[in-house]
Image (cartoon, rainbow, N blue to C red; front, side):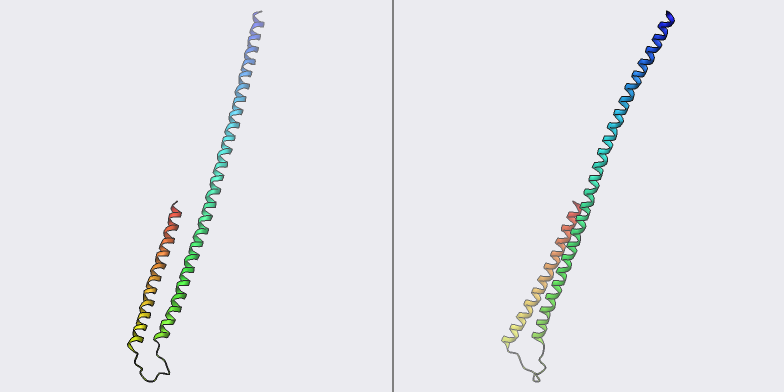
Length: 148
């Protein structure tokens, strides 16, 4: 009888061990599944961050290109304005070829010409200053965007 009870105890121990191992196996399987789900979630978040960074980088590049184009347009516009006004001033002060006699300008005509020349020079200075300030503003704005 002792022997039967021993076999019964051994059988019960094996069954108990198998049940414990089965429970551990289930717990391990569940933990692995949770870990895999957590890892998948982290990977999805990383992918979303990378996509957002890529979009922001492309957006910044487009903004930078637009800024460069605007600056280039401003430069071209300033050059054209300068050419037009410079041509007008040169024509105003150019000696006429048909004038063989040294014609004396009246004080009034001379004052008008000097006033036009002063206005031209002051406008030219103000336009250059405004252009420089505009360029500096756009560059600083771009730098602020890049730092943000």
